[in-house]
Length: 256
Image (cartoon, rainbow, N blue to C red; front, side, top):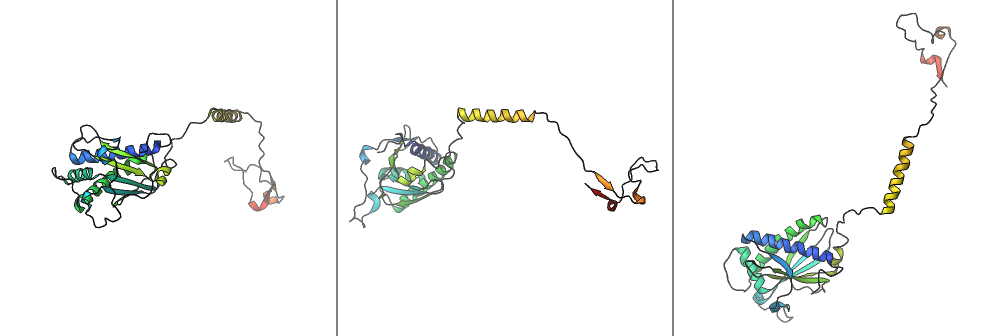
């Protein structure tokens, strides 16, 4: 088993922790009681995967473990495999279908129930991961044991006080494990002391120019009027009592 808390596996641990919390939430809602889940070690009785042999294509699947393949898309891409041992799969099916204690044999109906239950859990994972990864669509389906070597793996198990004993093995593909780090939404880091000093210096220079007094001379346009008799008194006051200047016709003056 790969230790998800080892250096370089921190994001895998955060990803699996969301699965742990989502499993506990969904199972607790269905069972109508607390259903603690946690990361743990492999149960001794299911330490070796019960993968179908090449010559057992016609063998009854009631004695096989259940495998679920989860494909991530969006900002995180890759595959995740869940292996649910026979006894745990039967327990999950009973919880989801609301049936009492029964045997551990698996049927197509109970396998479909496990698949639907975990699909609901995957929905919770997608929602819970938004605060860390931008988007995390997850497609889930029953499958065979994965052929790719895991980049990270481990177990999720029911905790003390859980109404049923559940153990689920998880495996992350190399692509999924690698994409968890760059896809994470990192918080904006604070500027370095040198950057802060430069910014303060820039603000000080800007403040100096804002307060600087300058001698400014403003020059307005001049006008030259024609010497026509009709316009000779254009700049004088009119004989009326309004005190306003007469404005000569535009044809009689030009701008300089």
